[in-house]
Length: 217
Image 1 (cartoon, one colour):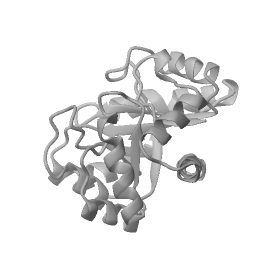
Image 2 (image 1 turned 45 degrees about the vertical axis):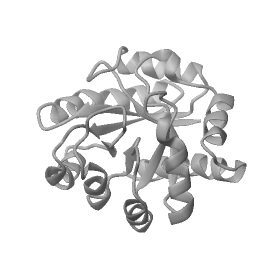
Image 3 (image 1 turned 90 degrees about the vertical axis):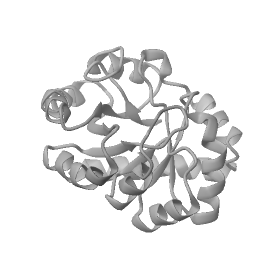
Image 4 (image 1 turned 180 degrees about the horizontal axis):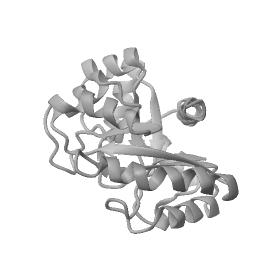
């Protein structure tokens, strides 16, 4: 299993990166990406703190670790340039906090994240078909989430993705150790959102493809 959406005490999470790593490994995950909430005020600090840790801990922890960023509440007009800036600072993965119905997110955030070439768009809420078509064209993954407050629109997302060919991944979006769900729970969330078994398997394959890309950085 792979989880590409993990929060730590570097932003709003309740556990240090090392603790999150331990819980993920115990739950059976083979790779995780730390994606702490970031904007212009803390992005550099997060990456400067995270990158040396993951380089060392990946060698000895028995789980592959990656340093990412979740751009959160960044004005849509600034998102494309901020994605580029995060990568220049060493982020191996850049996602954007999408227009979930569980939060107040600026209109246009989903589109800006896709146009800016984020690796994936987290919990994109009531994403439009036009946005999903662009995500398919630009190969920006859309996140089906295990986090309950964001998962209310998973069914809508799966339908739109099926219509448009937009690629999906499944993440936990967790803040604490018990947010790392097991394989059976991941599968149940996917099927409950309306995926077929083949579609669910493809989401898991998509996460592997993202990891393969990060390994080449």
